[in-house]
Image (cartoon, rainbow, N blue to C red; front, side, top):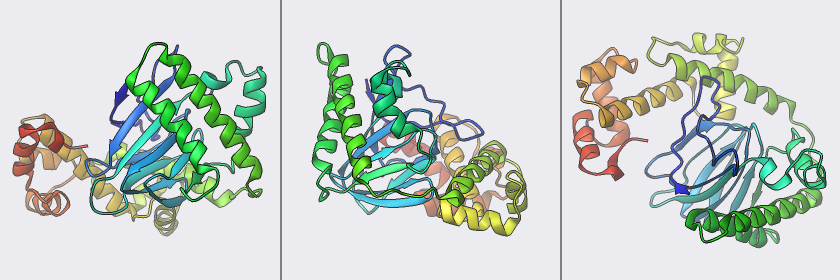
Length: 305
């Protein structure tokens, strides 16, 4: 079944959304990044995607890739990632999130041992990006799109078509990784990812509090200066700006989904000055909180992420 990926996470930034069912563990998503960014999250499943319109900045672990129409990407299990528009105008992604067992079956099977394990058991292989000009991109993009369309449209016996296309995809990724030059383990990036998981969890569980950079740093046993460097390297923003963006996203959800007074929304989201909240909200959304609420009720396309 096709849906927009409305990402929700726990305090460790593990995604709470269930992808598919226990019997058929795959989710099929379309995202318009100009309607909503894909927030930082991770999941145990594998993810493969394709930029179908515009360009996107996809951050995977500590690397940000500027992907354009036709570019494909693969994200390994347990890897933090996020996405936002790469330019003005429409920006759309097709993505599939699937459990390795959908393709590999039992961990003892030849499919799992020879094809899935080489993907999931390599800590240095957080992602693979294939540009449209790369020789292997065409077949990978075709496999992603075939699986995505079968999952979205659900023709008769579509489960076989989805599994077959994802099996083709895994085989292609296996070959692409075998051809790629061996990459050493970036231990700093892996360490930063674990620290960022802890600090993002702190921000998302305590955004309503008067949180400081020192508080965020303590959640990962870091100094404030190292917290700042880690955020800039991995998230591309300061912890203060990230905290502000989380507060504004939560405020937008409350404005769109409740009748709570604006002053109460501001207080619940960590803003102790309503005037500052209104200015900051308008600077990001180009609407005052009241106007945003009215627009969100006028049509679903205007609601908050």
